[in-house]
Image 1 (cartoon, rainbow, N blue to C red):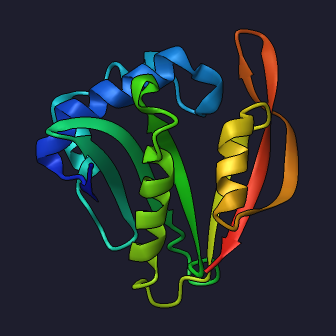
Image 2 (cartoon, rainbow, N blue to C red):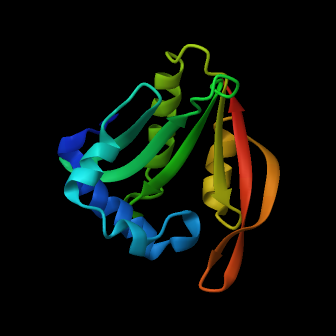
Length: 166
C-alpha cells in the first residue's frame, strides 16, 4: 500500500471513491451524493490542490485509490492551532486490513511538521463503532456528542466529537 498527498491528477479516482462513500454511507458525511455528483473535473482538481492549510491523503493498492482522508487547518489566527480530519473513507473491500489506521498514522506523521498545530479534531457518526474504536486506539478522546447533527431522509443522526492533542 502506498499513501501520499493527492493532486489534480487524482481527481477522477478521488471523485469515484468519494461518491461511493456518499451514496452508500450518507449518514457518515455532511455532504451528499446529489450535491457532489454535479462537480466538474476542474472543480475536483481545484479541491485536491494541496495547500499549506488543506490537503487530501490517498491510500493506493497498486495504482487504485482505495481510501481518502482530508486535513483542513483553521485559518483564523485565534483558531489555527486546530485542524480537522474530514471526509475519511475506505472502500468496503479494503476494510479491516489496516488501511484506515495507516492513513491516519501518516496524517499524524505529516502534521508533526505543521508548526503551531496543537490539536486534530474529527467527528464520527455515533453508531460507527469501528471508526470510534480506531480513533480511540490512536489517542483521540471524545469530548462532545452533537445530537441530531445530521438529518438524512427524515431521520436524525448524532455525531461524536473527538480530539487528539499533537
